[in-house]
Length: 65
Image (cartoon, rainbow, N blue to C red; front, side, top):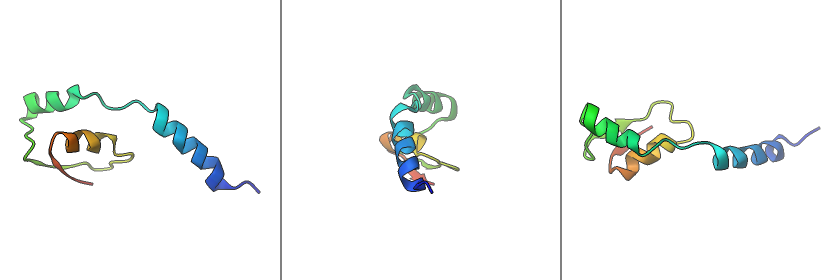
């Protein structure tokens, strides 16, 4: 029987390494189109890997997941 932890550990590392990140321009677009400010709270529903959450945190937003 295969050890699922070992199997998926390799898969997770590859996913983390090669999955494209959200472009930083997305936050700039949200600032322009939606008036996003660093002081605003953001809800990242279904945050998954947290890559989008990371962008909001870098912008200074408080993020609830």
